[in-house]
Length: 392
Ligand code: ADP
Ligand code: MG
Image (tube, rainbow, N blue to C red):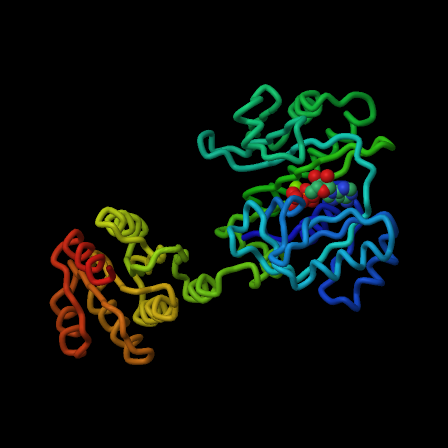
């Protein structure tokens, strides 16, 4: 789960990670008061769950989702231009994201921009701190072109971030004197937040030094481990459903693993591995999957019904492939769920079903007796070929 910059900054404040003051506003009536509190110069920042806002462009041509503003009029005009407008950045995809919240932040006098992030490193199964003297730009580009400008420190989760490691990073960033001390303290606080909140990522790009010698987190991108959210209700409360695909929200209500994709062949599968293989085989025969959907090993009829409804209401879907291998899963539960969903919503696109395993005969019988126009597939390949042909 991701949160907005303004929410991340509130967590920074709580943990003692220094950042510029800021106030969020959702309605034009709130602009004046936010400005009054923040003062000038200020920066008006679009709040969307994507980076690259500064260099982004709105669909009406307005340039920049992060605007430094020297006067009250300038700030208000920027805010008015951004709120409700759709911002396209490198990370949003061409459709962009509608800006529904703005963040008014103190305008800082930047001396230099740095990069700092804490992530989970899968190879070493440890948190890794990544820091670079090249801030405000893509870390991927720095990693490729000038890897020597990146310092990486792996943290042993059993003991946490050690003082010498924080000093190693501060040294790697070239800090001396008071800035060195500020960096060590900031790292300690940032790591505490990352760890205690079960974050999967905390990225500060840029971390800055100001002309008056302060070290501040200017931007904040924070993501959390979904599997640990149950122990952080205060984080769950920060979820912004506007930023999520409505079909994925519906799927999460039923504990379904669903990811919307760009293709037109929907698939309903049990088991993540089989779901991946099903997407592969659709592509192999020249089709494009419309989603990843794993109903799980022990799905109920209600879950299957909900899953099938989500698929049926996606306007991009031109055909459906149900691919079930009944191990723990009872094939008849799947069949009943599919029939129940179709009864409610109707079906006017091709449906290919491949059922195999536990209670398969009963499942096939349920489908046959339903009177639905179903094409059955004998094998995965056969089923995939059939749905690709029917959709073409
Ligand atoms: P994004 O990464 O989405 O483009 P940032 O918050 O990093 O958004 O802002 C982009 C750039 O705008 C920063 O690299 C920085 O140069 C400038 N900027 C952002 N916030 C401030 C601020 N409070 N004061 C001065 N400049 C800022
Ligand atoms: Mg940034």
